[in-house]
Image 1: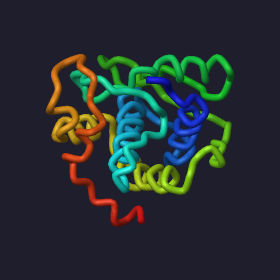
Image 2 (image 1 turned 60 degrees about the vertical axis):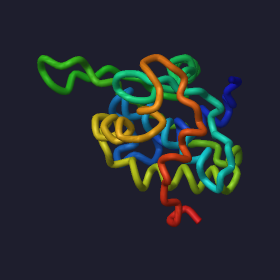
Image 3 (image 1 turned 90 degrees about the vertical axis):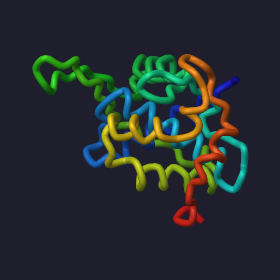
Image 4 (image 1 turned 135 degrees about the horizontal axis):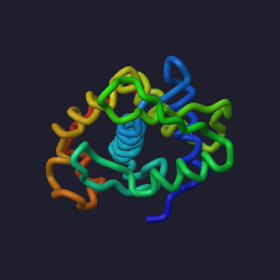
Length: 167
């Protein structure tokens, strides 16, 4: 699947910009927010379209976008985002923290994309990576496939998401 690099990068910039402190704490949280962006967009109005164009794999901690690491690394090299390892707690691995001074280019998104981005921030932005992991584990897309398998976007329709707040 070919990703839409412009939209992908601007989704990440949007998510970072709309966190309370202008940072996303945790690789898991960013990966899950991207999952909700793409699967919600696919399900919304039965559009069968995603924003990033990425595909997702079933991993132990929930759905993970295939091109995530490459996109983040490219943005880091270009100076568009900051990626920092922060040791928050002794005896735990450092947390990857994403931040940016670059504002997202919202002109790359259509109105439905923008509604979904706003909805994802409203519904999931305050959740931790662990909370989003547990939530995704309860949903049909993750439950229906085995470890390391691609998650078909069509499974989004089995979540029966209430989009009344996105209309």
